[in-house]
Amino acid sequence: MTAGAWVTSRGTIALDRPRILGILNVTPDSFSDGGLHADVEAAVAHAQRLVEAGADLLDVGGESTRPGARPVPAGAELERVLPVVRQLVRRFPGVPVSVDTVKAEVADAVLAEGAAIVNDVSGFRLDPRLPGVIARAGAGVVLMHSRGDVGEMASYETAVYGDDVVGEVVTELAAALERARAAGIPDDAVVLDPGLGFSKRTEHSIAMLARLERVLALGRPVLVGPSRKRFVGEVAGGLPLEQRLEGTVAACVAALLAGARLFRVHDVAPVRRALALAEAVRIAR
Image 1 (cartoon, helix red, strand yellow):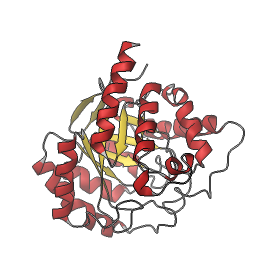
Image 2: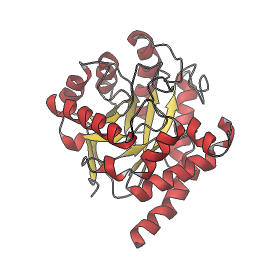
Image 3: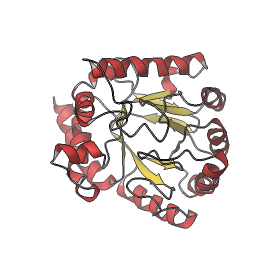
Image 4: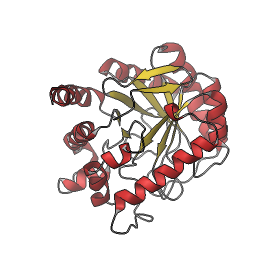
């Protein structure tokens, strides 16, 4: 049974229906939309479009994790995300803001400015100070499965598994959850992300979608982020970024029917419409 709520520093998010995180990258080099929303005015305008399309949360990223990306110093990352977070909190008070960062220094600053959630794509592997920052703030956290540093995790460099890829991912997510507990973060503040497309070849990501119930067995709500990912294009014969919408929608629907409740996407409106129907089917079952 999926947990029914997510506790954050800005209130509790009910998971009685699918919740969509609209992606707002304020980087110059993200794989899909790098440079499009790199100044505050453009970022806020795009956030407005995401909210109007039906985003329940906004997920702000200031450091690319595309293959070969170079780590960004904390100061530079803060220059990108902090002014945007300030504006989003002011302009959209009813929309929780999540910040995609692996750094304690960045998390501390954005949480102080009103962000509610930290989305850590390293699952507490890269900065041992980060769990303490989140615990002290009472923030929500997404713990995503990955391997390697920010420049490696979206590549195939660490995508080496034995016969049970899902079992290995679940074991590593369980370790991330234990790191959260050890820092004093309550379970109801934690959401788990299987890391589709991160440290996984196409067949690994498909296996995760097919056996998502094994992640759910850890007892926490599950978020998926298939949006425009390479595996989505590869399954359909090698489609470029601009032709991966249908596959993204299909992956979200499959994940919802398997128990996921949170969906991190670029294209909010079509995903929201598809999930509305899929949720109606799920309830009717």
